Image (cartoon, rainbow, N blue to C red; front, top):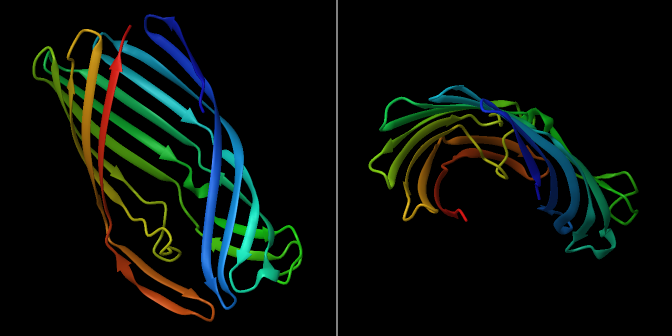
Length: 258
């Protein structure tokens, strides 16, 4: 939930901001000698976001936005399928990253509009995740670690460029490409999230069936670099290999002005 407010300072400058309320619900499971271990927890976190738009010229505008990090203190339970006496309560702290973007929009001709953006994301907030017991059981004392995941993620910078072509008064064609590096690394990457660098290719069309209505349809394909995995689990062995990933995204949006 993100209520926001915008204010037009003058014809060339506008500002806006909002408060973010997010509910995070997580499940993490894994095998153990006693059976399947399932950790579940949730929490509500709070953050903020703000942005500015500057009209640099009649044909060009610059935008900048920032979204804050959000701290979560997840609380929940751990259950062990083969050892009920090991069940109990748990907690885990995690901080999701902040991000900042700068974007440029320019009308270069009656037919063409060009766009570009740069987005920084503070993925280095996520270095590891420790799940800690908050109640004693056969699985361990209060304060003992149920599970620990090592991430060692790094900050990323995403670059995107795009263009709109005005086919006629009702129809606009859209094109775009983006380079989206992964926050993961070849040493600590796990099969739970075998992410790698991505290249986005996107196309779309905007159609105005009336003065009040706007229909947007878009399609994007993510070309994902093969992700190498080499990870060792105590008493289980070593997993070596690679993952081949891709993604296709189809979006449809309709807006109507009253």
